[in-house]
Image (tube, rainbow, N blue to C red):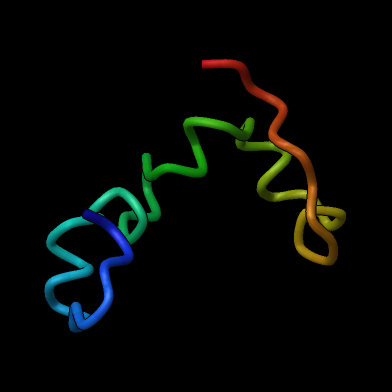
Length: 52
């Protein structure tokens, strides 16, 4: 039910905890650590480089 209209921030956070956890969060599921720490990834969008 993520993104439902009328949901406040607290409700959004309860429904989407993986988006708010940086260590071992959702980005680590799709990106290598070296990619996330790269200068390129800090300046432009980089496509995911891990396959689940």
